[in-house]
Length: 321
Image 1 (cartoon, rainbow, N blue to C red):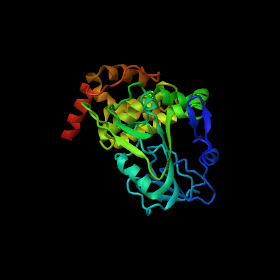
Image 2 (cartoon, helix red, strand yellow; image 1 turned 45 degrees about the vertical axis):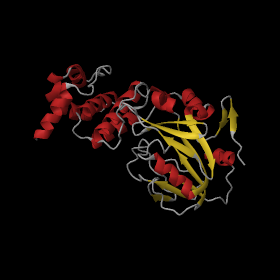
Image 3 (cartoon, rainbow, N blue to C red; image 1 turned 90 degrees about the horizontal axis):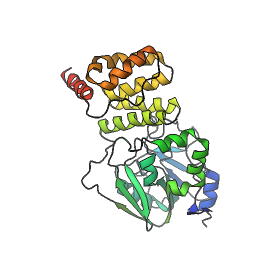
Image 4 (tube, rainbow, N blue to C red; image 1 turned 180 degrees about the vertical axis):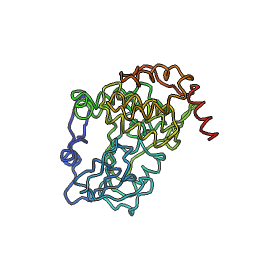
């Protein structure tokens, strides 16, 4: 029997507290539970944990998977278990990442008798967001609605995410007290309805496109740093941007800034060396490179923007190499 918490907005499930979540969902000790996309925060009472990424962790800020997790590598769009193999399927902050949420939802319904789904609410996604999220998700008359993300760099500079990471009071409000406002929470039995909407007249963000993914991670790294997050998070994301697209002058520029703020002159020298040949082509590089080389904090308001001459020149030279 469900026993959720309540606030002024309705029912609220304590996703950050696994013991409380189990109690609120009414999950019994003998229920067979599949934790889908468990990653670095597996539910301790699930019998099986499924994740597609067991190493890089680029969907979870690089957090490692605990050694105690009963982990199976697999894709949510093709779950490697038979029909109704589980009493519960818990899918927490996964569907916003997947390329085909219709297939993922159908698989959840196929393998379990009931389940719990949580995703960011689309308003939280716009003001906060995460580099690898593909969808803006809402719940309309008990239907899970997916709208494609139509921007690469987040329109409000990920400030809500940065505040949730750096401000304990704001984080407590977002992840605990008002979680049913920042997130979509859905408990289902037998099945649930979902709808995938098209983007009309707009380019859709494609995380499978290295340019899109690189720009998303690099801009996220700078945004969360500017709005108060610790340098470790920013460093992880800009380094992942450079793994995705090693030749990106934009990502190298942001990396130099982040390492300057982090007090890593060795890495600053490495990246400014790559940037200097393009300084004459871009105002932001002209401003930042002398500051970076002098050891001063760079001007965070001046950055390489998409489509600027330095970016185009860089790719022309790369193609000729």
